[in-house]
Image (tube, rainbow, N blue to C red; front, side, top):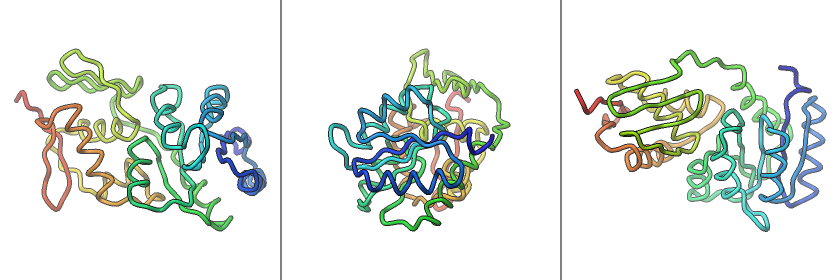
Length: 230
């Protein structure tokens, strides 16, 4: 994919920030569109289907966390990468962002070269091929990777992007212990730094929605998926 074919949606209520980011991204050859709040971001995203969304957290009308959550519920954006760029650095903001389906969270101020490096690192994921099977069926659980759909005992569940990817990864190889480092690398990529707490939050959500019986914690190592019907 050529850089000119890559669409990046910038979302920030500060025109100066938009102007600076747009300049640096267009200098790299990317196609850039902009929105000033969460509502307009959703509308423009639905129209343009961007490859990457770079969004502020604190905005009028609708904040970035809420907008991200709504976007992630739409299957059209399964392949869209979302990065938060914000002045807020509290732990709960990080957790809320990742829980809503963000792929990265960067605090302001950030130098242009570092910013572009982050963007390039995230966009490299577009080139990665997923060689896992499309549909996984284990007992009463069905996971459809093409449609991003999950069914448990015939009941459909809606999962945020990162929760789905984590479930799919673990279920792709039942009884295999996935180390935390491998989970981080596969789900968030080597260019994104997340803590153990982020993985734990996603695992807790999966246990609540899918059922605790499907997951086993290997203390000090990681997690594995188990077939409860065996």
